[in-house]
Amino acid sequence: TAFVEFDAVSHAYDGSGNAIEGIDLKIREGEFVAFVGPSGCGKSTFMKLCTGLQFPTQGAVRVAGEGVAGPLKISGMAFQNANLLPWRTTLDNVLLPLEIVQPYRQQFRKRREEFVGWARDLLETVGLADYADKYPWQLSGGMQQRASICRALIHRPQLLMLDEPFGALDAFTREELWCVLRDLWQAQRFTVILVTHDLREAAFLADTVYVMSRRPGRVVERREIDLPRPRP
Ligand code: ADP
Ligand code: ADP
Image (cartoon, rainbow, N blue to C red; front, side):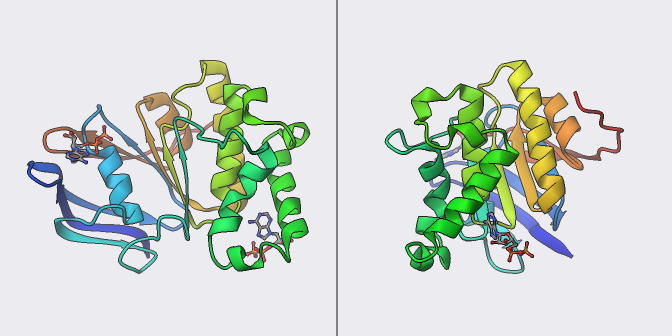
């Protein structure tokens, strides 16, 4: 059964033509999909429709069998800019969703020590165990991005939304993080929607790659990737 389903979805922002048009797709639970395409083809619009930040002007979007996913409750997000809060340590940045999302929010004080344990486990998985108490400005760009992925996953979302998460990193760090992400995904099997300009990244990470064209944004190709995937 589909975890994310788009049924003849088109979306136009007020006063302009369709940003995306005629999108039909089904994403399985635990599937890793990538969307590639030029700027303006509607990748961000697609993400906003998945998380309920926009509603489709035509057609239907269902996530986890419901209208849309709550922006935070069942999904975690990371962007090109790690967006860590500069006045918080790495650990406290990673804990943030647990302070906001139910049911964790109301348990936060009582279970803080346990939650800190989860955060430290995740930080260890991505190689940041020694940086838990550092501030964002003390971390490299790649380390900040690792922390932002931990923050996106701390509340065990079913859906991880990644918008160009590695776009600002050097090639070496980027490929290192591909492996980190794949390891996390293989261990936990959340569903991933990755938006990227990098075709190699899409082919390395995703089960299925959707190629989009612009004006209006349409899916022009859906390709299942079945390659042996050695570590880069
Ligand atoms: P991408 O993420 O692939 O660059 P977007 O989803 O941001 O594409 O944009 C798709 C189209 O929708 C573009 O033509 C863009 O100009 C338009 N668009 C995006 N956001 C808005 C908005 N808030 N209001 C009006 N038009 C928008
Ligand atoms: P399941 O993966 O079967 O849903 P649980 O979520 O109940 O299992 O948790 C399994 C273990 O992972 C427990 O030790 C629990 O404390 C820990 N845990 C639960 N949620 C998280 C989380 N968001 N981050 C890290 N560890 C967690």
